[in-house]
Amino acid sequence: MDKKAMTIDLNSQILLDKAEKDGVETMYDRKIGFKNQCGFGLQGTCCRNCGMGPCRISPKTPRGICGADEHVIVGRNFARMVAGGTAAHSDHARDIAHTMALSSRDGNYTIKDEGKLVALAKEWDVETEGRDIYDIAHDVADIALMEFGKPHGVARFLKRAPKQRQEIWKNLGIEPRAIDREIATIMHSTHIGCTADIDSLINMSMRTALADGWVGSMIGTQFSDILFGTPTVRESEANLGVLEENKVNIILHGHEPSLSEMIVLASEDPELVELAKSVGADGINLAGMCCTGNEVTMRHGVKTAGDFHQQELALVTGAVEAMIVDVQCIFPALAKVADCYHTKFITTSPKAKITGSIYMEFKEEDAFNIAKEIVKSAVLNFPNRDKSKVLIPEHKSSSVVGFSTEAIIGQLDRVVNSQIDPAGTIKPLADCLKSGVLRGAVAVVGCNNAKGVSNLAHTTVMKELIKNDIIVVTTGCGASAAGKFGLLNKDAKKLAGKGLATVCELADIPPVLHLGSCVDCSRILEVVGETAKYLGLDTADLPVAGVAPEWMSEKAVAIGTYVVATGIDVYLGIMPPVGGSSRAVEILTKEMEKMVGAKFIVEEDPVKLAKKIIEGIENKRVHFEAKIEEQILQGAEA
Ligand code: SF4
Ligand code: SF4
Image (tube, rainbow, N blue to C red; front, side, top):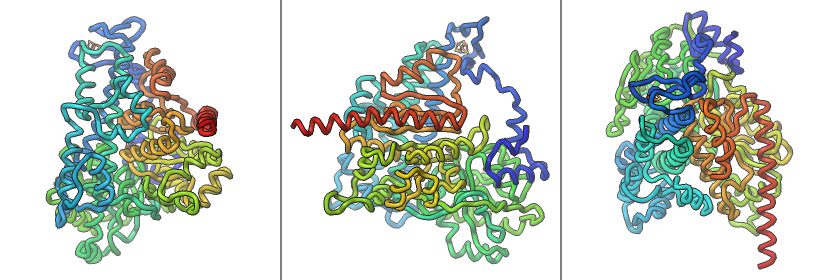
C-alpha cells in the first residue's frame, strides 16, 4: 500500500517521503504492518475481563467460559470504552477545577471572565453579593469538585437542558449522579458475573456518557473560560507550514489548558525571547497540536501545527526544538521519532509519563516558573538543530477561530433588527433554521483514524454539508482538518450554498465554525440546548446532527453516546467494535431512537456518509417544521 495515499494532506505526504529517507518509522508504517487486524476485536467479541479468559465468541464457542454470550461481551466492551472516554474528559476537568481552587489575585492563575463566574455562581446558589471574586471562585470550584463524587442527587448542569430532555433522562433512569460514581459503576457492572444484559449495559453507558458531556466536559469548558478567558473571534493559521526556519519552534500537544496557558505566557517572556536571540534565533514560535492546539488557538490565536496524525511528522521536519505534552492522544512512538532528530520530547504530567521522554513535572502551584524552565530548555536546544535535516513543508491556511457560544451570539447580533429584537440571544440562528435559509446545523467532530485516509472524510463531509446550506460547527481534530483545508476561512463561503453563504456574509463568519477542543463539544450541547429552549422544543426536534467521520478514541465513543442521549443523531465514519452483537447493533442504530429520540448511523464511505447526513437533516426538517406550524396554530387559537 502506498503510504502517501493514506492522507490527503500535502505536507504529510512530503514528510512521509522524508521520514522514509531519514529511516523514521511512523504510524503509517505501523498501520501497513497490521495487515489483518483481529476479527474478534473488530467485532467486539473477545473478552479478557477475568483470569479464565481470554474468551472469544465464534460459532464453535458461542459463549465465554462464564457463559457470557456475544451480546454481553460486546455490551461490556462498549460500556468500558464509554467509561474510558468519560474518565479522560472528566479528569481533565477535575484538574481545571483544582486550578480554579488555587486561583488568586496575585498568583499564577487569575479569573479572566468574572461575568461568567458570577453567572455560574448564581446558577449554583453561591452567594455573590459584596463578596471577593476569588472567594466566589473557590466556592464554585469546591462545588464542581463535588460533582465528581457527591453522595446524593444528580448532576447540576442537567438543569441546563430543555425540560422535555430532562424528563426523558429521568424516566429512563439515566440522569448521571456523580461523574466518578458512574465510571466506577460501569467498571463494577462489567466485572465478571455482574450485568449480563445488553439493554442495561447500553443504558448505563448513556448515563455515564451524559456524565461526560453534561458534567465533566461542561465543567472543563466553563471553568477554562472563566480562568483563561472566553474565546473571541480571531485570526490564525493551520498546518505544518506554520513552523519557522529561523525561530525556536515549540509544539504544544495534548489537552489541558492549565499547562498550555502558562507555556504561552512563558514563550512571550522578554527574558526568554532575548535568550532565543542570543542563541541565534529570531524569536520563539509556538504552535499547537490536537486539543491543546485548539485551546490556545481559540484563546490566543496560536497557530495550529497539525492534527493527531501529524504528531510524528511534525518532528520529521527536523525543525522542532521541543514538543511539550501533557495527557491524551500522545503517541508513545514520539520518543523514538524525537531520538532521530535534536527534538526534546518533554512530558509533564504524572498521569502520562512516557519511556524515552524528558520528564519535567508541571505543578499548578509553581506553574509559571516551571513553564519558563520548559521553554528555556527548548530555546537552549536551538543550536543543536541540524540544518541539513530540516524540511518545513510550505502549505498552511489562514483561519478564523474562537467561536464560543458567546462569540457566536455576538456575531449573530450583526443580523438582529435592533428596532424589533433584543441583542445577545440565539434568535437569529433559530430564525434561520425556521425559515430554512439554513437547512440545519451539523457538528463535525472527532479524531483521525488510520482505518481511513487522513482528513478525507472530514473535508468531504464538511464541503458537502455547507454546499447544501447546512452550517457546520467543529471541534477537536475535525477543527484542525477544517483549518488546514481553508474551511475556517471566511472565503470558504464561496463553497457554501446560497442560504448559508448569505448568512456567512451578513454575520461575517466562515461556513465552518471552530468551537474548540474535544471537551468543548459541551459548547455544542449548549448552543443546541439554548436553541431548543428558545423555540420551546426538545433537542430531538431540531434539524441538527453530529458526525465523527474519522473517530478513533474512547473519548469519541463517550462523545457520540452523550450526543445521541441528548436527542441528536450521530453519524460515524468508522464502525465501532459492536458488529458481533446483532442486539447491540439493533439498539444503537434503531431502538435508541424510541428511547432518546436519536440513534447512531454508520457509513464508512465519506461521500455516502455526507449524503446520509443531508437526508437525515431534511427528514428532521419535516418534523421540525410541523412542530413550528403546530406552535403557530396554538398561538393563533389562544
Ligand atoms: S468474563 Fe467470562 S467471557 Fe470474559 S474472560 Fe472471563 S470467562 Fe471469559
Ligand atoms: S479529536 Fe480525537 S485525536 Fe484529536 S485530540 Fe481529540 S480525542 Fe485526540
